[in-house]
Length: 489
Image (cartoon, rainbow, N blue to C red; front, side):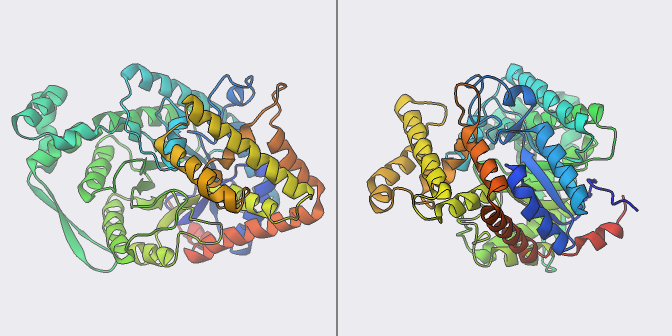
């Protein structure tokens, strides 16, 4: 009997990993899935990592360099991932990660580097973003392989309403919702105390006073509406079963309990019950968790209890740590497991590319591998330096600080340090550096090296597999295929 893959996994605890260079990464990832009898996700972010073929194949400079920055189109990663999984005999879910309402992929990259910019999008900009998302989903649907979609409308969250109160808040609320809709909305929450029981048996309540209900309704109105518009697009183009995750983490602060409750409850009112939701739990991108682990466990336990009451599990974004070998820092996986009972999804992506750079850097000076690494490093440095000097799309206080640290401290010690923040946060750009003919010359060289050098390929496969095994073992995803077989929707 032929193995059915890819498939929609439902709310199954599992890893989901980014395949930025599928030609190089798939073998090691799928071998780890197979060894641990693990069903897992393969994905790329539609907000920045991948893009439709018409973007990928456009002349250099026509779009932001951060748009489809892997050089891997939607069609290509879905096709290569699904076909490789079939050859390997591994159950995977092919995910369209971060269908994002935004006007700039560069803004998402700046958030990764630590610059949290709050923006306000016009209705016209939202419509343009929805049109682009439709083109993304059309290409994904045409492959017949996509099973899952993560929707990100965080840029439409309006934080101004958190500061409103009194008559000013009442006026804004009824102006937005009208008397009828406003009263119906208030009747669902006002004055209620919602009680939840966490994984450890500790129970808690979430109060919903009138003022807070009004603030939340105004704050999330556009985000909720846009989420439903994206879902309409998906439903109009995908006939096979598919799942949905809500990205709720691209925010300037940790998610509050009443925020998660209200958002999930309002999604249900609109007919959407996501399999997963990803709140902001205090993780920083590309950094080990440095906060109090007991506080993290308590926070996650409460958010997980709320999510499960609405039929959803938590997903954890920004899952990569400070190095390919650190997980998310000592004790972090254990805290998440204790808080969720192991019922979670966990995403990593960029850490595989960081691992690849570390491998290239480890070869002797003068070798093909090391020479490629140094060329990548040099061109990345020159590119981001120009961005700062010219006030380009990637310029930010965070980038300027990283550039200053590199030039004044790191370069004097080791000009090619793979752990330098500047390189860790911006080395991904190299995959989208192109010559006048449009060739992504660094991406092509990496693939050629992998396919033509047996020793290098074996090392990459082994290191990628081991990284994936650390994730699977650390969060207890091994053997989840048996849970999948015993589950039904």
